[in-house]
Every structure is written in C-alpha cells, then in structure tokens.
Length: 484
Image 1 (tube, rainbow, N blue to C red):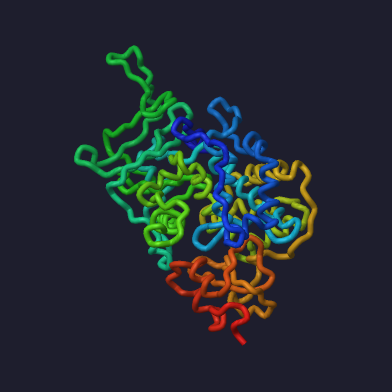
Image 2: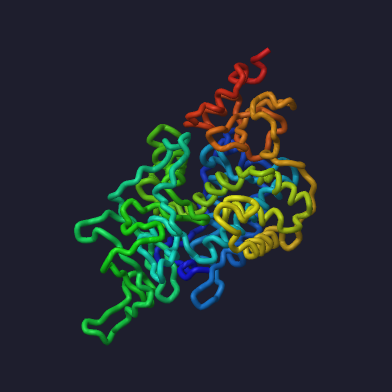
C-alpha cells in the first residue's frame, strides 16, 4: 500500500451506543411488510447472533504498531441501523438486497452482506478511516490539493448523467471543511480540507512528512499540533505545489471519499440529499434525514454524532447503485450470487467478480482502470465473513435458479409469464431506464404497490425520462380486478 493509506483518527469520531429503539410501523405499510417478512426476520436474527464476532473478529484495523484491534469508527450497531434504513427505504428507487422468499431465502441476503463486508474491510475498515486519506505522492511530496482528487481525478467534476443532473450538488467555492479522520503513521499527512482562495493564501503547497516538529529545545519551542497524535510533518505553503491533476488550490474541493466504501463526488452526495436528506424534505418528499443537507455539509457522513449510521448508509448506497445493479458482459450480480449459494458457496469466482466491480468497475479486470488490487485479500475477507455469519459451517441449500436481475425479458407488464396482484420496481436498469412490473413471483424485499402508476410515482420519483410511466399499459393504472 502507498504511505498514507493506513491508519485513522479516533478522537473526533463519536462512539456507537446501544442500538436505538425503532418507532413501531404499521404492519401493512411498505416498511412493515419488509421488516415483518420471514426473510428480514431471519436475516436480522442471523446477524444478531454473530454481532459480537462481527465487531471483534471482522471490523478490525491495523495500528501503527501492527496490531489488529476493533475499529473505533465502524461498529455493528451502526451497521444494523443502516441496514434497516436501506432495506426498507433505500435510495433512488433501489433497496439493499436482503434475500429471497422461502425458509432459506435470507441466506442469499447474508451472502450479499458478506460480500459487502469483505470489500469494506479492504477499502476502509482496516485503516479505521471514514474520510479519504491523502496518499497520492507527487515527486515525493503530498500535495494539499489531493483533496480535489487523487491520481488525476477531479471529484467536483464527478457529475450525474444528463438524466439525473437535477439531483447533484452545486459546488460552493466558499465552502470550508476539514476531514475528521486521517492516516496516523509517523509524519502522516494532515486531514484533507477544502476552502476558498484568499489574497493571503491564493495557492496551496504540500505536506512535508519528513519535518521534525517536536523541538522542545528550540527557541521558541516547537510542537506537533496540526492533529492529535501527530509525530512529525508540517504544512509547507512557501510555493504552489500541484497535485497529479494539476490543482494548486482547494477551492470547491470538498467532495473527497467518505464512508465505508468512500462515497465521492457531487453526483453521489447530491443523490443522498435528493432521496434521504434535506432536499427531499424541502421538496415535499419523504426524508429519512430532513435536517441533514449532504450538499452543504458532506462531512456529516463521518462527523455526525446523531446519525452515526451515515458512514454505512453512504456505502450501501454505492453498493446498490454500482454492485447490485451490475449486469455487464453476461455477468449479473444477483444471478451470480444466487448461483454461488446454490452451488455450495465454493470457489472464488463470485467474490473475484465483485472485487473487480468495486476496485476497477468491471467483473473481469484488467479493464479501463487497470488490474485488480488486493484480490487475494478481498477473497480472504469474504471467507472470513462467511465463517462468522454461518458459524464455520456454510449451509447447503437449493433455491431460485436465477435472481431478480437475471431475466432478459422486456420490463413491462407483458413478460409472457404469470402476473401478480401487485406492482414492484424492476431494479435491473439504471434509474433513467427503470420500470415497474407485475411479473410473478414477486422477488423478496421489494416494495409493492397496488397499481403500476403508483409504483412509478414512488419508486421512480423525479425520473425525467418517464421510462417507467411510458412502459405502462392503460390498464396498469387501475387496481387489480378493475380491468376486463
């Protein structure tokens, strides 16, 4: 690993308390139907039985002294709260996959969680980091403008597609934020920060990690005071120092990665705000976090003491958007997951494909961004999680031969198969192409609606393409039994 990719700051991260008591929900509501389903109940029971081992055997980070100890940032209590939110409410018409119907249906959901944990352990948990660390060395120095994007990236230019552009955050050049976690090795770079250019400081320099700042004998005495636990290093603003991407300032550069799988860029933070945050509330839509403005304060994901689960919510959002929805080159995530479970959970084919998607954007790297990094470690993490969740004995089951994303049928009400009495969103496609269907059987864990138009208005609210509504037949806006 590059220097600066390990370690994490603990003092400003709120400790996790006991799991909060949830407000009761009507059993017939969308949330009630999910949380009271056999799939969710069995899934949660399995997780609760493993919660101590999850905290003490899986959520571990490596200290600068090379010891592995429980993370101070990532806790089971926060994870389970985020699972409840993302499995019942979700984001952008998508929900975290919890499994299929039937006695053993929750097993598929547990394996989905195992794959999610395996990647999270590699990406952030092993470093005890919520905020992205500064790790991109340029000629032996760490540019302070790494906050704008590392390896030549520009996070403030991570725009949404034209279809979803109305959701993204606006870049505010006056925004000033400082990360709450950072690397902790000897001389490690300070937390990433952003802020406007000023007449006094029109540019940014670099972090000098070799500088000895503990000089009690100096006149005046000098101490290491940039961050708690600092052993060496300092800011050097004597001249402009460019990042790999050419930036020599941090104006508008507040969009670095945050959360368990590093949510990054104005589009992703904007979607969180559009569906779960203050913008949803301001525009009259249901909002889980009506007082949280992910666009005005993206650091809330790592810094919030009130909503400690946000670091997990952000990672699950990425998982639902980019992993669960992945269907490229004949490799469909849900289908591969179900086949892996039905095949006895043996081999690394499934987790290697998942690792490729998370690390390189494709299931069979090398692809556009290069070869897979840490594939062996990710696979070992997956095995470790499965052993914890299934107590060292993986269940042998045979269930559905394909998942809710595996069919190649036209996603309208006329698939040629039997029809159900309810409508539900087909999570196959990207949001812009999403549609509602009433194919039978209904996949487990999906929200259901009485009519197709009701499904479109809730599951695909704000869909500018109107793909969902346009795919409906005239009778699909009627309740079952109304059409002849």
